[in-house]
Amino acid sequence: MSFYNTPGTPTWEKVVEGTCIKTGCDEYVNEYGLCYSHEYSCHVPACNQDSYRTDDGDGFCGIHEGKCWKPNCPNACYENGICFQHEKQCQKLECDAPIQAGKFCPYHVNSCWKPYCQDMVAERGLCLTHSIQCIKPYCDGIPYEYGICISHSLECAYPFCDGIIYENGRCMSHE
Image (tube, rainbow, N blue to C red):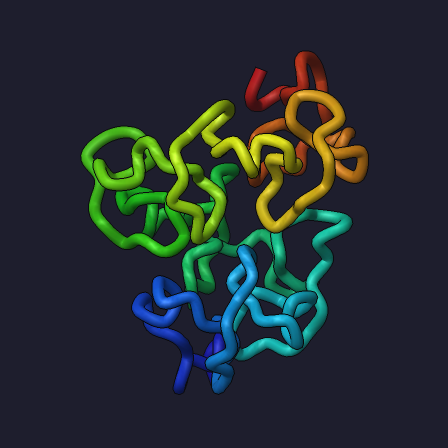
């Protein structure tokens, strides 16, 4: 058996339609891609472990943390949450369009980067609604400083980086 149990896992259409990403579940989802009964589960569709959102903010369990946030991808990710295989694709979770430059396809370049949100960017790559939430993925904490909540206050202000803050909300790698 592979690292991910892929039979019956969701397609891009399931992600876009807003149904739960968990294998065998077709319930309506919240902004994290999970239904009410799975909202604290790991974001790997076939994994039933609890996620550690309060610690890492990435939405994965201890086994799958640090993996690419694109559905069903077992690769380790870069600091932007995307792996080498998906780095030339739009970094919107629900989009797999190829990109030439930047992070997003032309359709998503001005939309909020949080998953499933198509609202226009207001600040820091986030829409008005999400600009009053922590910038870390799958975290809805209230921003304290540099767009990060108290739970993530010692982490770098880059969304998928958990490096220790050095100066101005950035780690040594992002200074």
